Amino acid sequence: MARLSLRGIKKRFKTTDVLHGIDLEIGDREFVVFVGPSGCGKSTLLRLIAGLDPITEGTFTLNGKSMNDVPPSRRGIAMVFQSYALYPHMDVYENMAFGARLMGLTKAEIEARIDEAARMLRLEPYLKRKPRELSGGQRQRVAIARALVRKPEVFLLDEPLSNLDAALRSDVRLEIARLHRQIGGTMIYVTHDQVEAMTLADKIVVMNQGRIEQVGSPRELYETPANTFVATFIGSPRMALIDVTREGARVGVAGGGSQTLDRMPADANGAFKIGVRPDGLALARGNGGDGFAASVVYTEYLGDNAFVYARLADGTQVGIRTAPGEFYEPDEAVTVTIAPSAAHFFSAADGRRLAA
Image (cartoon, rainbow, N blue to C red; front, side):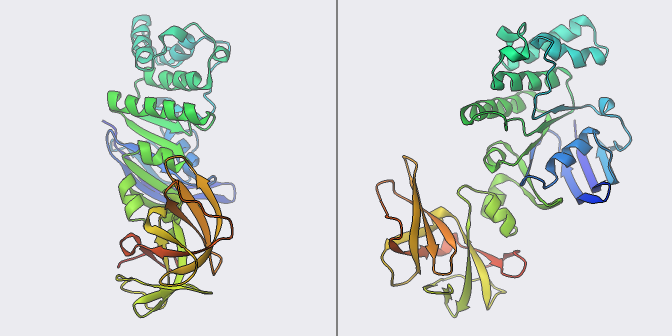
């Protein structure tokens, strides 16, 4: 069992505050992903959990026991680093055995654990190879296997796929998901890639500038983002945010165009923001009628579908999913409309979600 509790966690490096009071509960066997832009504090938070950096303020407990002053080697936590951190002069077997020897395990116990980890991660053919003889994906699997041999209560993975190409990222992501199902351990995974977060996590923690913006399942964050930051960070292509002014049953955009909406935010009578994903927008050729006047910027053709990016009269750029057979020329005049059921509403002042 591994339940983690973070209460009022703050981290300061000299005069720079990096984390500003993190409160978070992580349940047993959960796969939790910390996601956010570079510099938001997610890797710092992971290092505090691992014990690699001291906590400036606050309390971290594991299964009810304070970990603040417990050294990393005694926390029952294993960390997989972005850079793999393999010993280049050791073969795969020795890399996997190193941490287990420091734990004082017998030779038979170490061999049994290495056999199990190598089988789970399909590393049996590579045990006598040096890291330089392995591909990036194989090296990352060795780093994960080395952590697995220790049988920790908690696995920490710090952007483990960032050094891999797109095809390898997909393969190793599947390996990590399969591994979590097999061992059932608590995993905390750091990434700036929201696609990794959406596909792997039971629970996502969205961070920004040292604070937590929202915690929830991938579906909760996608369908009910708490604010404009989460709305635009989760989902690809990103959600468009359109500044509108309410005019009775219609909403208008500065510079041209308005549309009737059958649902509006309850506590916004003037200006607010409408968030809408590419599936919730429609495109028609020419300007005029119900909708917002726009011009085409460019089109992304992706085989099974396409995205047309258009600029509204106020300069806002929006992405619209279209059929791959529909072609639009750059600067072509178009009209963009919002599907009312797909609209999300946010405050123009602070970006918080507004109830409709």
